Length: 399
Image: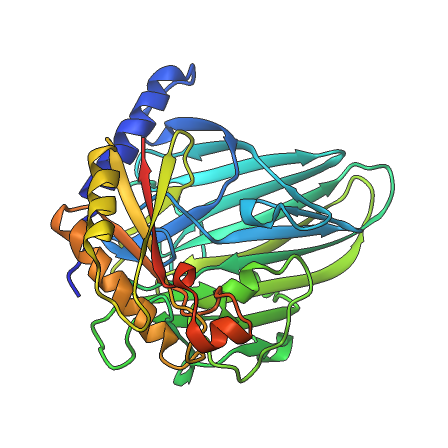
């Protein structure tokens, strides 16, 4: 597959951060430069040079997030979970430190509870990189929860990584020589120090990411490997689908609720990046203020992946009417006709047809096939399908 360029994104991010630096009153001095992002939810994505390691890169778009449970309250930095009962979406102030390798600290406030997410660049020995002109091997995600409510509380947390290696959204996940293509639930005794995420297990030169679920000898209580759409929708309870094939990979770490005394702080840690020995050009992109999006859907005939004239014109109009384009996501869908067999492959083919148009214009593309995971399922649609489900949803990001 043709590699994509990140020059547009890198330039946009440089111009954006430079502009912010000019607006701040903080002293800018080499690697001590800092940028403040107000009203930011702290989500992030990672890549190695021009190769993505998590969904979103090289667009500042992330579908990874955290969930914090405090008694019966659910707090998250995922905007997609806000429609769930009892869920509160958090935004805070993000401080980016460093001129090259960034450290990012986001602090959120909910009533008398403070949550702080720290994204720390670390080396192969899991130590923080002080010289911000050196590439990190991993980014450590630390979630601190401080209780100032005046009473004890029961607190737990989830960290979810939406894994995507280059353009493989159904990345094979492995532990050493053991590879998983089906969902898994791992308890502490089974959780390893490192979990590899492969673009292609048959190609030794293909990109590999790595999750480090054990930091400072402390393990999560549960670790799930499986379908990102299912894991992404979990506000607390996580269904165990062990043995079920997954088509869109994700890794979820969960720390069960424990007592947190008044005025006390607890911390949850994990890391994601590159296996030791891999040459690193690890880069982090934050969800940035000022990024807008437009959506359009193009539709297909039953069982087909051919784009008609209407679809071609819709794409042209979308691009022609938009300036300062950062990138595009392509969500491929199939309907319920014929069941799940072949649905994923068909949604991939539909994405490939649309992707060629944006590749030709040099616009970074993030593909995400869904198969018939979101299709309407009833007696009629199972027999004849639904034209509204045979589509690619194009979302264009711009400034």
